[in-house]
Image 1 (cartoon, rainbow, N blue to C red):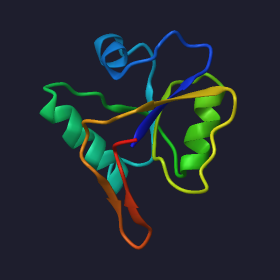
Image 2 (tube, one colour):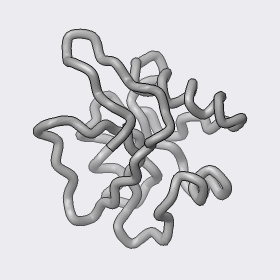
Image 3 (spheres, rainbow, N blue to C red):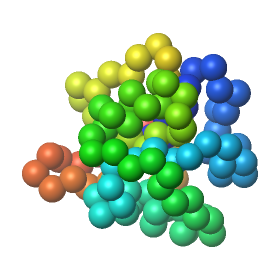
Length: 109
């Protein structure tokens, strides 16, 4: 599991993002395994961050982040490439996100 920020953003760490929450969280729907796992991880850290922009695909999350609309929730998985307009911030201490039928996507990178 990762967060995506625009490459021009000064944000480089999860702690900076959670302290400031400077932009909306862009995510797939809240009932998805990815969003639920992220919210579980936030609860364990004693914080919350509701989805501000809900999109139907990870590709759309990436597109909106690259356009500067917010901070995206995504995954590290084979075949997913992020463009030069994005910085990837790993969520090393978060639980694993499991997607049924699609394999396991690890929160650690």
